[in-house]
Amino acid sequence: MAKILIPTALRAFTDGKSEAEAEGKTVGEVIAAFAAAYPDIARHLYDEEGRLRSYVNVFVGDENIRGFGGLDAPVKDGETVTLVPAIAGGGAGRA
Amino acid sequence: MSKGIISDDRLSSLSNEEIARYSRHLLLPQIGLEGQERLRAAKALIVGTGGLGAPLALYLAAAGVGTLGIVDFDVVEESNLQRQIIHSTRDVGRPKVASAADRIRAINPGVNVITHNTRLTSENALGIIGDYDVVADGTDNYQTRYLVNDACVLLGKPNVYGSVFQFEGQASVFSAKEGPCYRCLYPSPPPPGLVPSCSEGGVLGVLPGIVGTIQANETIKLIVGGGESLVSRLLLFDAWEMRFRELKLDKDPGCPICGRKPSIHGLIDYEQFCGLKPDHAEAPVDAIEAKELKTRLDAGDKIQVIDIREPHEQAIAPFPGAKYIPLGQMVRRMDEFDEKVDSVFLCKIGQRSIFAIRALREAGYQGRLLNLRDGVGAWARDVDNNMPKY
Image 1 (cartoon, rainbow over the protein chains, first blue to last red):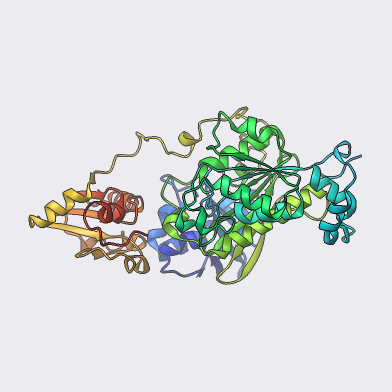
Image 2 (cartoon, each protein chain N blue to C red; image 1 turned 90 degrees about the horizontal axis):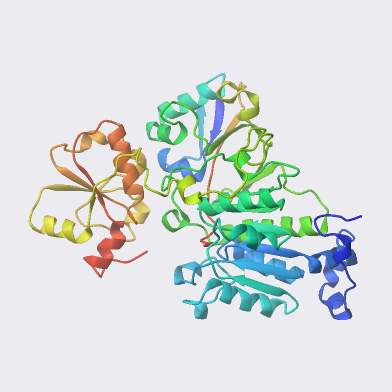
């Protein structure tokens, strides 16, 4: 079981929850199980071809999965998977 | 030999007045006379004088950064004052750069303030940024963030990054000479409207204060040339849970601007890049004007009006007769709609409602879907003047 940390920007799709748990041996399996529990979040994580969207970064522990095989990166029991989508807000600094 | 980003030939001795003013910095061996001289010689550009730009400008001015440039094209609005502490109630309606420049001069008359009352564009960005040693990014939109990033990479300037949303902030230092740039982290932005802006999603007033202050700290360290910078690290801050997290950032060898074989050699069209120009790949969404909706409702037309805002937001300005289905539950509650009847979707500004419609279409909904153009804001403006505008 891995712990998933859900950023504020995606909590509208998880009934406001900031954490979830999901089973899986790889990041892909963990996120797929998570998306199955919250179907409205799927289109925010995957593009039409089922790839992870490029404005969502996934970290296992403090490492970005990009350098560790992407969705195939292994997840050990009890590890934390953090979703980090791009946010642009500057408190309305308009330039 | 020079330390940090300010070369030694730009340094000169402090006056006795300056020694008195900056005494608490001078007492820190990590800053000292030399560090303070570097701060005075430095030219820092703050892009955006909003929630992040406000503490950035206040602290960099107080710290004695010799030249502070500020870029913003907006005017101060009442709804800014909850967090943009560089502006005052009496400044409402003034250009933000004018209001910010007054405050900077009041804090420290020794600072040379340069105001750029303009939108940063692909045409002017290299010219403006080229004059500065370091850039602090406090903008509120993706196109300017990619523009600032690309200009900084092309010019070899460090970009002190901060970003906020609701209770959550991010900070890093993008300095492509030593570490990753913004594009290494996010190769492309989300489609417009998918992630609500602060004007739709809200932001805790103190949050940009904390994140902007972290940016000011990183800017000062880059200028003084010491400490551990946030290069190659992403700091995440959750103000509600009061938690900081730190993640490792790696340079992407395939990055289109700072990678091994860059494909971007100049500034591009960032509106296009961020999908803000009409995209023919995505089918347009039909819109209905507020007045037309009112006419049809008054005539007794059978219409399902769906309010997709969150419950706390509906409470600010409820829409009479609407069925509430928050955006996040749209697809799973699709069977609550009658496909034979027109559906009108509404939110605050008519942006998230487009996503609700697209999500339903993708999920196979067959009925007619209309978007209330400009959201309940338009209803308050054109139909019901008693409805609060938020």
